Image (cartoon, rainbow, N blue to C red; front, top):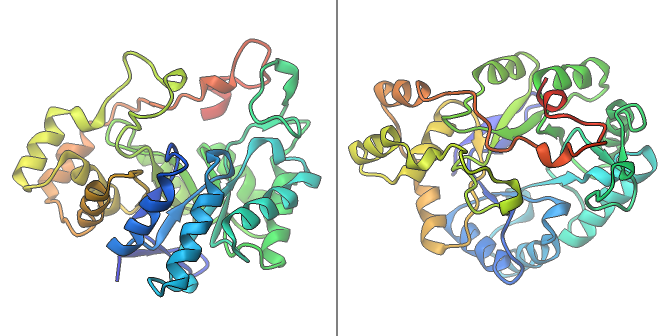
Amino acid sequence: MSRTFRLSNGDEIPALGLGTWKSEPGEVGAALREAIGAGYRHIDCAAIYMNEREVGQAIAGAIAEGDVRREDLWITSKLWNCNHLAADVRPGLEQTLADLGLDYLDLYLIHWPVAFKPGVTFPRQPEEYLSPDEAPIAQTWSEMEKAVDDGLCRNIGLSNFSEAKCRAVVDGARIAPTVNQVELHPILAQPDLLASCADMGIHLTAHSPLGSGDRPDVMKRSDEPQPMEHRVVHAIADRNQASPAQVLIAWAIQRGTSVIPKSVNPERIRQNMAASEITLSDIDMAEINALDRAERIMLADFFCPPGSPYTVEWMWA
């Protein structure tokens, strides 16, 4: 039985999940079947990853062949930015359920606190954005709550939300968010967010835990941090007879966050699962914690071109 974390409503989310962002069609299905065989029960998806149909086919195949039962899986997906208006939340969720071939999700997240006009996958012009006033998160959240009422998802939550934005949702919520999925790694440990979300009853899931070095070039900077390359991480890996990736995964779980590293490589998928069994020493943890520079890899500046209603400062304020 894989390790889990108990959420504020009593549900248990597996500590280690398979991330599917950047997993190409033709690869993601095989990776998912490999992961289920290795013991993964937590699969992290999103509509914008453009691979949910293949993920759904792999889930169906694993269930049909007796590899796993639906009730043993934790499936997360996310509402994309063009579906924030009240009339668009339910259709966005229903499309994801259809693509995944599921009756319900275990967790549905608002992917970003950023809104686009309906039908816009990614804006090319400033007028294709909706401002926070035009698409209030409170209205989006109300529709998410209705999806819980109707049994379409068991948990609802947030992704890439700052402490203040989480607080605003919690203060107006009828059904509280149980999870906030954010960038977390030793260079951006976010201890204050971890503590404040715990106070609000919100569990953190770590995305980009290994640095997300394979993401599109448009999202990269030449001087961005590389957590897996840090000499301290390598030294701790050597002490524990582990890989740097395994150290980063073990650190994430040991500090109380679930973690969703992506891989389509069968060997790495199994190595990542093995990392959930590694226990780092107090000295190891302290040395890793000392690496925190509060430096983001994912600035979200791609949502903030001239004329956009969003700025990097607003995103993370």
